[in-house]
Image (cartoon, rainbow, N blue to C red; front, top):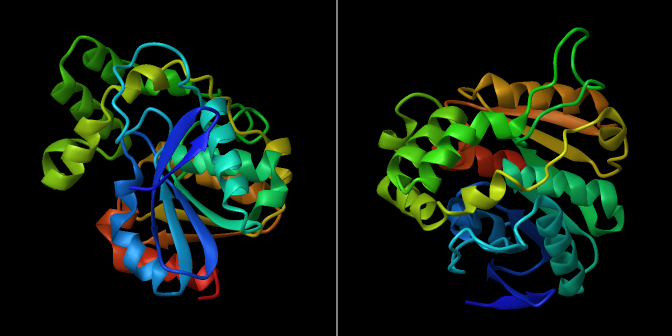
Length: 269
């Protein structure tokens, strides 16, 4: 598989097609394989479609120890990766934690992003984006139980608890084996994620997004993700929002036909 050396790290990626560059950033417990239901459709549009694996995610073996796993490191890695393509600004698509990374790249490095797609950005809002009287949540508290089970060596139960938070009861057991395998391959990244230093979304940061932005949610998604979409929708200057029918948080797997068509319509393909 190809890779690009970023800050001493070989960043693996999958690439397909030719045309304008389209970079895909996966979320928690995933890697570039997450985007397999999108690669053919996006490449045929046609886009030079590039799905990256973040530092310490598969295919890199990582035991959850040491440094180098932080949200800022991943933001920096992807920004340097995009610049390293030498293809000018890219269309940038992120899912969940990857959407948080994509959001921060558009905020901090606007010259790198042509158009932005945020599929259910993970994280929490600060008080500037919340309804009056609403107390800000703490993201680490939402996943702490799952992380602790992984730390104790019960990977299966940790993943089950994480997917219950992200999708709903019994979500892990309903996943296809391929989806479960990808998550098992990346389970120990949760140990880094609990201390990654992610900050809440703020109104000022959202208002700084200059790229046209598509906010994507699933019809069956959890309230925590809807609240982030609500907050960003009101503050990003050039944003539109769509809902993928019959889909949960992993809408690009639940209903790839609708997800792919929605993204490509936004990108003018």
